[in-house]
Length: 502
Image: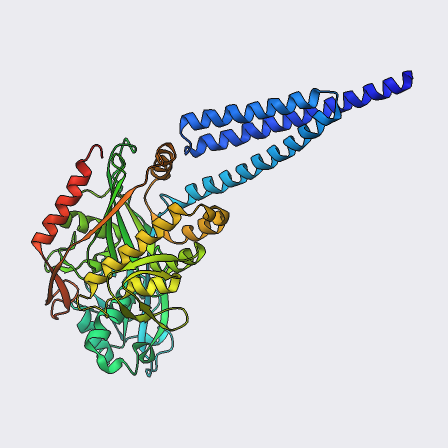
């Protein structure tokens, strides 16, 4: 009998020891979790404290159950400890992933890259850069990196460099074999494809430019990205302007200097929970900041770097831009497919000239359309289907962005794909926006779950063919400024920035 009591006493002591160890593990795990959540800075203080109290009470309840002698108390205690540990472990892993994303996904543009190539005619005898010895290499005079380009190339070959003030004339001279080769960055090559060949060289439709040229040498010129942010001191009350620059170009990485085909200002007022999206057409005829002489298309400002695009838009709209986001619009395909498609509103029924991933033109109905990623991109890129061209395209781009925001903020099942979404987002954009802006807005939203209001506007203009800074001796298509439209857009931004409450 005595042996049995000793045996039972040992069992009780062992069970108590196991319970104490489990209790210590739970407290340690909860400490790690709350430390990480604190550094995330997303939960409002009252929710943070409430969660700590709730979890602490649950752990204490576990401790009480584990100290009871009866088995029917201990079993729920063990089950509770396992469930609680699993929940906390998942939350730790989830929080780690978010913290990693915030660290890598914001204020993440440190360099800008000029990606250059030397082009020769396909039927020429030149096979590599050494074959250009004593030959002529044409370059564009307005490229600010010309000195670095020539310094790089002279280390490879002894050639003569010939500059052109007009990019179109440079391409003419190259195609007519007046120069042996031309050196060009990716951004300006996109310009040549989209704005020069498509409009002025219809005979290339059956024989594309790619069939006429070869690349014999490539190199990159890399430099540090200038910090142009205008930080705010009270994120929860100060309105901000964010410039959204969309790349819709061939084979680019986001660090490449390239045209800005999507130019949008997001004015965000946290006091009223309002967002105003203002779009400016890519061909808008503006004075490029820092460039003297003729005006140029707004999209060409991006060829001098994102800081030039930002400064040019600030000059045009008479505003300060706090931060920018560079978006790769092709990456939207992956995002939209991951979230299960989007419902996009269209003002018209039409068929796109751009095709989806299956090679089919997209049939769009007036009203809401359910699009997958490639269909949404074809819709957002379309301008040829409309008489008003790029004016309609900027509205459609806004419609796609609104549809994405609506889907992401309303579908809680997307949390199941959080890891895939964070990976996709990392490759979607580069920004100088600090992570604390996002975490502050997230904390405000959790504290007050009322919805945000998103409105849109765009500036209008006239159609014209005028000399530009890029092509001073030619007359490419541009959209001239409509002062009434500009004034209205500026006033709307100023009004939202000045609001203090809804």
